[in-house]
Image (cartoon, rainbow over all chains, first blue to last red; front, side, top):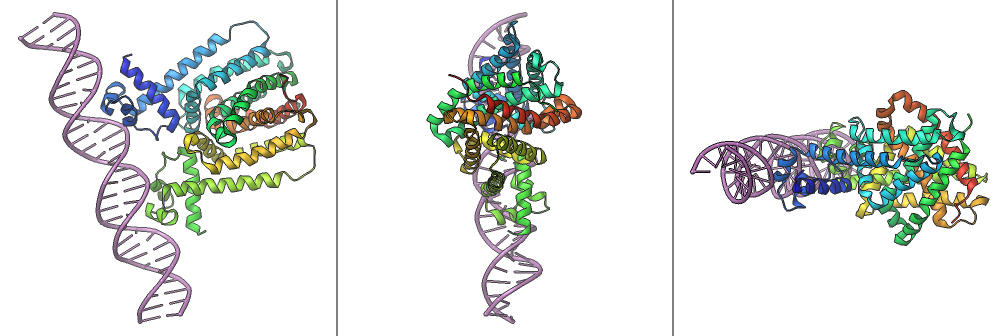
Length: 201
Length: 201
DNA sequence: TACATGTCTTACCATATGGTAAGTAGTAAA
DNA sequence: TTTACTACTTACCATATGGTAAGACATGTA
């Protein structure tokens, strides 16, 4: 991939995450690099294809991260906690992608974009797999395990996306305190949920 | 408020939730009622003011719902769980507003819209208030309590917004099973978190 | 009757948008 | 030197957008 093409992809990712698909014009993206929109069209053909390329790269990156993280033969509960905390750290370091994926989640309504759906599917599968390896969850239904996992994932994603609003609400200081408290709380919640097992009917 | 004005507001809420601010033109909204966009401009003056009116109404409704729900002098842990489950039910019945508020969360980035921030602030305040009334949480820092509450709220909101993607991933059947499992899991998680108290340093 | 007001329409406009067409400059192989 | 290709540019276009201006029609009120 050429240098410019890569740079265009980077800019597009940032802008789409910030303002959404309709909020960004291809001219906006090209301008950021001092190019005309036709230079962009030369590389990507259309706005839709540019957006597709952005999603595809994210999906690739996430999948490889998940694969490399699920190595050990340690306690599944610990690994689950670690994976979520890593997810959280990754979100804090680069909230851009969370924002973009959240927008995708919202816009999916009937388009059901595959890139995002598949990344989510595999990622969730591995988390659910970890949970049902824990003794207290071994007899849970898959819907139950999925619910539990999805709550944890949702908590992380929602928090990551909320940063600007939280800062507006509680000031930078309050936000930093919550940021510090959040990871250990997630870890704690994971062990609570794991120990408790699925709810009784 | 006139009949048409109300109807325009309803349509606008649906469309903005579905496609976002930039994804909807005022002509789109007016068309839905067989009107011209100038009829809309007559009632709301500008697109921005229309959007503001949508947010304002949602904020009003949510606040009154929270106020009416926090009556009793029952066990705070139970009330917390009930409030979240009610929130979840409300989301399932009318996911539109969750989608819109999630978009607001994303678009807030520097605009820092007050309507939504304030609705969230009061709502969260009452939840945090409930949590620290529980004996095991009485000595927690406010950042810790906030983290815990925000995880639960985030879990609900994220799930609600995920519906289309979840259906695409697991089929209608799988989605319904998860929908059934989710409320009791939330209740269970709440009691787990409440009983466990804040994490140790 | 005359006037005002609220609801909506047609006419119009400046600007932005995604995209096509055609050409220019540079580079590398034949 | 010709040919071909890549990476762009300027010129252009049909369409959509938010918004203004002015008028039509109905209803109520002096």
